[in-house]
Length: 181
View 1 (cartoon, rainbow, N blue to C red):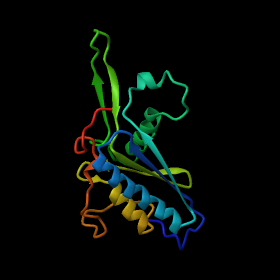
View 2 (view 1 turned 180 degrees about the vertical axis):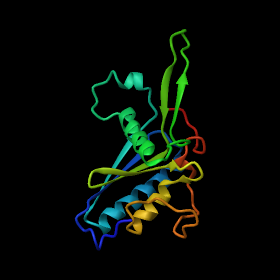
View 3 (view 1 turned 135 degrees about the vertical axis):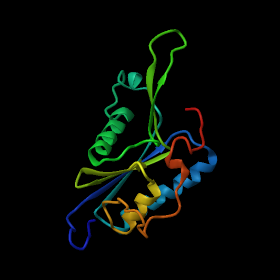
View 4 (view 1 turned 90 degrees about the vertical axis):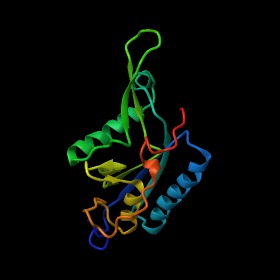
């Protein structure tokens, strides 16, 4: 864990990703999550917050576009982090084959969670939520709670008294309100 009293030169960037299509009830919960993230910036001048909307995508279609930032590349970077650190992005992120109705080859679809947070310390990706260690799923809420405690490595040991009992189901694709995109 990093203590700001001992390392005031660090910079923290919080990237919050919100799924574009959600239910009306979910919008207010997402607004609270964004406000909570922005309060971290107000409390610490070394914190930058960036909020972006995204949606599930077909990498084959996305690769045809001219956009510099893509959902596919972002999710791939998150997956590289998870592989390196011994975590999985499942079940929150899902890749599945979408069959063709015209008899063509199926294409892969990347499904994204309702909300996701990526934490960078000095430009190094240090955490993605939601994620799982195989035994436990770590939520965006838990990640933000750790950052509020000035912990920049929000990995939780079993039995950690700081782990919130609130686990917002929007972190996970199959638990979230399913809406067509």
